[in-house]
Image (cartoon, rainbow, N blue to C red; front, side, top):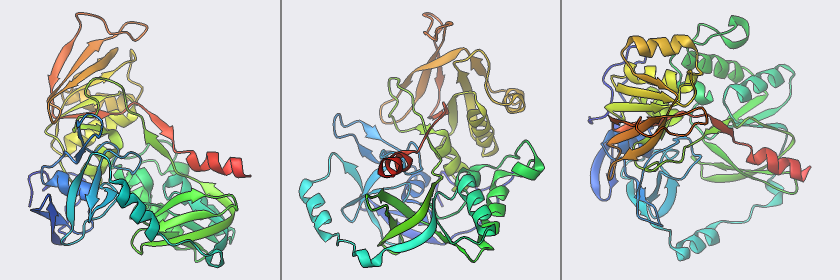
Length: 387
């Protein structure tokens, strides 16, 4: 169907999905029903989604989690995040080149109707986030018989668990050790569904928390806005990936680890042929193994610390498979014109300064950034100010 779709995987089942037609810059493309615009474009070999309004530099996917705006496109003239918006038959998509027209924004604002206060839904507990933390909280509150509304902006419950094909470590009783993340997600989701007092709204974005202690929710499929007033607001929104500052860090092909796993393990795509990884923690090492499972060549890993911070078992897997792991090294630059073509790295001293003369260059078409996370805590911060 396209050059970048997986046709086999050692763990994940490749299932047939309905094929639909979409249009990118008036060009006909094939997509799979239920997938996002970003995934459909990458499946068809398209990774430049727009251009930066300041310098016209190409922009592509980075987080695939709705946390940045690098994948912004125009659908029917409206700006949407392509990583969060599902394809529809006949959808016409264009790159968001430059800044949007101010007149269009005013028209959009004028079309939004004020929410009547009589439509406020009052509820004991609202949980924002359907990852492992939000699901675990919903299960415990469900056992207590409390009425709970859990909302998540994705189409499946489980958060990052739905991207994890590896088996987890730790305690079998508390964290399902020995079970793959994708199966843990399903176990938690199934438990939540057993409680009649726990309502779940998927593809629902929390857009604001207001002075009257209400929360605005946008239900994407229904295109409806709801105001909810909870007695308790439980925020389980997880984290967003950090990026790094280096020359060429916005080139298409520079991608967060979560986005890479989303494309490979959720959407069954092969977004690269030759992958380079920055970060030797568990996330970077595991993502490297996921890449190898999908038939992607991992050309190298750099870690600024003297040792990788991830479990040695993950590091050893990559080493056994011939992946060079360079500790006390950092990335200097990503090179390419409209896409990553290579990276330059260098050894660092005890103060993490690059050592002149130690530079190396690796040919690659994708650089995976796995250098930690920052909390998605805007709602928590705003909520505390209103208490």
